[in-house]
Image 1 (cartoon, rainbow, N blue to C red):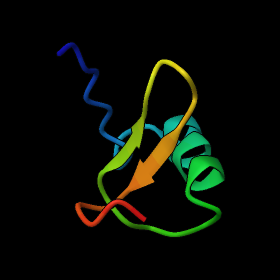
Image 2 (cartoon, helix red, strand yellow):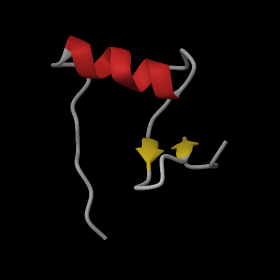
Image 3 (cartoon, helix red, strand yellow):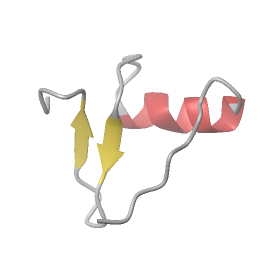
Image 4 (cartoon, helix red, strand yellow):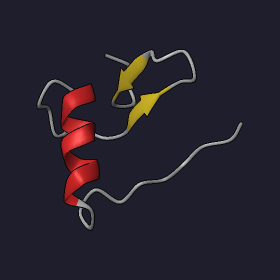
Length: 45
């Protein structure tokens, strides 16, 4: 399975993108699959 690690502490634009996916929640990981489905955290909310 291919993935891309993005360090949002070092990239403000990517932090904003992550917060868009997570509806403002600062929780990791934020996983976006090829179909656009978003999974937040290890519990998968």
